[in-house]
Length: 317
Image 1 (tube, rainbow, N blue to C red):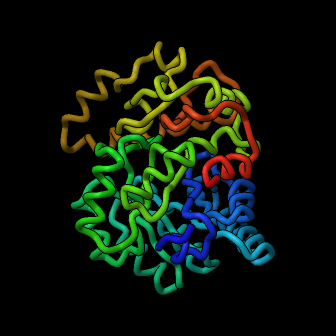
Image 2: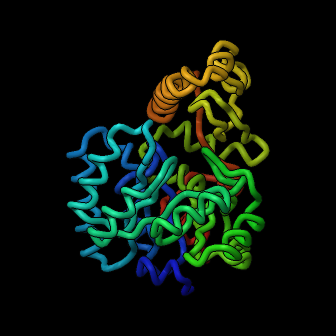
């Protein structure tokens, strides 16, 4: 299946394994590359720049050995990530096939990455930002729709893809709402050049998370996904576990009150982001009654924990 995405990255199938905080790792991406797709890891999954550098080198060696697939990293490019500059420097020094930017202006990332021969794809949820990043030189758009997991967009897949296709000239990669080959074909029929898929890979053998998290993705479905403000202060999709139902999905009252203060809002959001990420990390890496598991509605099609190559076969047919 040839599209502009497969040509951009030299891959066999127009599929990117989406970057997922705490979930994506080298083992998953290596297996994805062997299957002829692209894989992406959040740079924030590595506590140190040396660990990020080591991951770059391991993936570079794996690609050289198999001659297949592509690999990249996701960068949070706003002020909530003080490591962004150092992470970008490491990626440009070590090299990778692509970088996906999120939450902020990608201008500096695009300039530095292009000088290093790295392509840059940018998360977008609307036309206004899509046109901005295209003007900055982005190589493709990651169109985050309202069926995505995590911090999702507000437009339906068809509406968003067709809007971006009509007004932008660079490839559109649809993110959200894909858990089967039929759903992937639907996004391509709307005009997408590829898809970015995350949630189905949470319940993979290679994922470095608890079996409880993986089994939850197999046991719960689309109807069990709710939006919560308690992770980052911005609505985020999670599985509606008993703990989530107990604590609710809205930010605490004091926090909502402080968010109305223009001077304090930024600091309140940064604190909420820090607290939420720590809670998410605990739930993903150890058994705890405080289960806050991030996932999207595409877990609907997950029935069991499978190896990455089995999930990819289900998606590409």
